[in-house]
Amino acid sequence: MSKITRRALLGGAAGLAAASTGALAWREVSQPQARVTVRRVLDYGPGLSRTVQEVLSTYPELARRAKGARVVLKPNLVEFHPDRPVNTHPVLVGAVAEAFFRLGAKQVIVAEGPGHRRDTELLVEGSGLDVVLRDIGVPFVDLNVDPPRDVTLRHDHTGLGRLRLAGTAVGADLLVSVAKMKTHHWAGATLSMKNLFGVVPGAVYGWPKNPLHWAGIDNAVFDLWSTLTPAFAIVDGVVAMEGDGPLKGEAVPMGCIVLGDQCPAVDATCARLMGLNPERIRYLNAAMWAGGTVSARRIELLGETVEARAFKLLPHLEHFRA
Amino acid sequence: MDLAALMQLLRDAQLPDGGWPYLPGQPAAAEVTVLAAAAGAAPSLSALTAASEGWAGLLLPAALHSHQPQREAAAALVSRLVERILSAEGQVVEDEDGVLGHDATLRAWSWMPGTAPWVEPTAYALLSLAACGQSDHARAVEGRKMLLNRQCRDGGWNYGNPRVLDTDLESELGVTAWAVMALPPSDAVSRGLDRVLRVREEESTTSLALAVLALTAHDAPVGDLPDRLYARLLRGGASTRLDRLALGLCALHAAADTTHPFVLERR
Image (cartoon, rainbow over all chains, first blue to last red; front, side, top):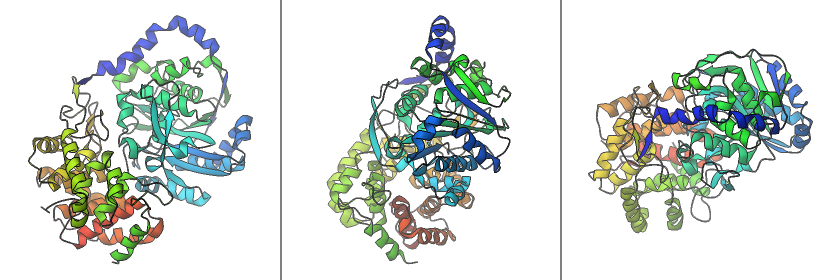
């Protein structure tokens, strides 16, 4: 019989913080330089679309790859709570889709496979995403029932070796994680990397996608990111979630979006904006040791200055604080 | 209601291998084939056998119970599935300091081998055991105990965590409906049915279908829910996802008949 304890949930992260100080100095210089853009966005009004387009055009490699491409946007669409900011706002998803069309994408698809809620018809209608997508002629694909493909895990921190992942996501020319900025009661924060859980089909693994939990949430986040390597990450921090996230927390008006072509760098920047130390978030720490950029000194920040704030955290997550 | 026309839509979508996909153009999917069987379509035995391999196999014996010719043709398969259901069990954990707000030592049934037990697969297994006369088996007794232990404070069920880290979580209509179908009448089920009746707050093809199935399983009035469901199915027409069409047909049959596609005897 396996054991689950609060101590076990916390031990690994605390160990990371204490054990690797010397090695990190060496590790920092070997992280590739990354560019992350932070833009002030105070609401989900019409200016959001222009802002996204401006930022995407400053990533020339992305613009080159988007031409004629089949782009799959993976938002965070997890629950149906009109009064809580649990999902990536549909207006941002629509703005990103339009921006990729402007870059010359041949097709843009919005795709998600919620981890608990099977009823995506309800989620898509309830969140207002259906209206946004209908207006711009973008289809929604339910990744939970998408025909899967066998994929070998690149680093296999989970020990699962292979996973069956949604074919629409695996087969995309460009996979873009369009995530929500939220605290997470197990992992510390859920951002562009954790958002990738949605490419694991429930029709294969069930609701929740429990093999990933048994293999360790942080290991699974790391494996999904390092195997799928999304081309771009966009995090919705216009209205973020603090406290008991990812579902039961409170809205916090961070007033920003964070964008970049390296998920770990984007997520590390978001973590700092949330008052967290990204190197204590286990999946980000693992990404750093696998060649991802997490250290602040290796991230060139573009755009505008947004003040970090100390997000409220559940007591057992306090060790994630910067 | 022209149920025959909807059945024809479902039959028209059957694949050459005898199964059904979630969407046209895709390969057969186990869950859809099982739901199509429950709706009264006629999957091939080979399609049913393929569909029985994963978690959908937990529901397959229940799905065939009211379709005598199919059930007879698949008798050996059903028999093997009942044995498999009785020997399968979820992975239990010792929750030393109450991280989880439920009894994690009740084995019940999981979506996949080697993982924890959850509400929906447990409900499927209980419905199948009941359909095969195994309601009193010790595993079924434990399964019902697990479902009751996982009920949320709001009266419904979610995927299986009613409380985590000292916080109550909300229920979901669909999972509540499956749990209610799998349990005999009780105060807990009455609270679950009350939760199901909140379907107007979260109306979709699936939520309407499952609400009708849960209510009819307990001979509770369904009001205009079948009409609303029928209207949605008509609106979707041939573009309706096939699992939703099959589930919707199951519900409309349950509302129109005295039998139930998943429950042996209405309570």
